[in-house]
Length: 110
Length: 115
Image 1 (cartoon, rainbow over the protein chains, first blue to last red):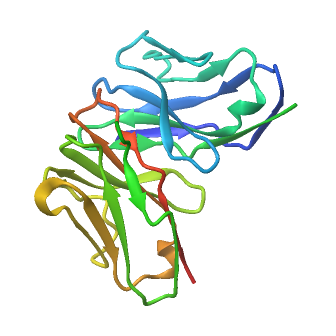
Image 2 (cartoon, rainbow over the protein chains, first blue to last red):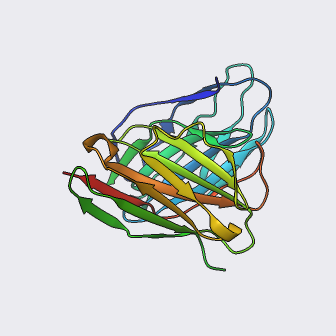
Image 3 (cartoon, helix red, strand yellow):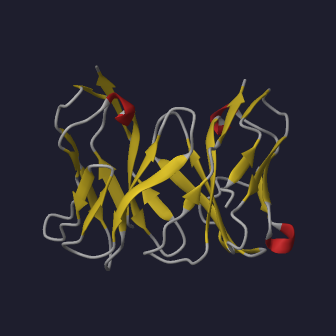
């Protein structure tokens, strides 16, 4: 069945460092891909999404490109901030549900 | 616009007891979903309502779990009797439309601890 494999954490970076969180997927057809973020004490929030191959989703300085040839949707940010500390989830849109990765905890230190 | 709300935010119960979780979706959203994250692992789908009907309940772990959505508004998820392995964070989500392209809006989750 459809599934998502996400880079395991935790990831600890210094402020202004470059961030990459890897995400690959297995799916039939052409699903939409999402990155959700959960800040401490809050619920899941949509960070960005891409609905077809070669689409780039972007928000708050984060980017991810839907790569059909490598079945990937890696999350990147050029310069992280302390406020980016959170758990990041890669997800694949299904007919009735979303399939999530295990989540990657990011801690950014000043 | 109010987001998805869940109650309680945290529940601690003993093995064998009953717990009922509540979810209020965004007004007007016909689609309501329940998910669970156990012990820092991936978030797993439990079931999907369209209005008051269960569209897909393939993720429900066993018959100790009962979900309802009477009237097609809020939903409850009852665990009876609770077991230790039921501990985790239960998320509710809603969406106006369904399908692979549509974003789901998530609530803050209910953290359930079974001791």
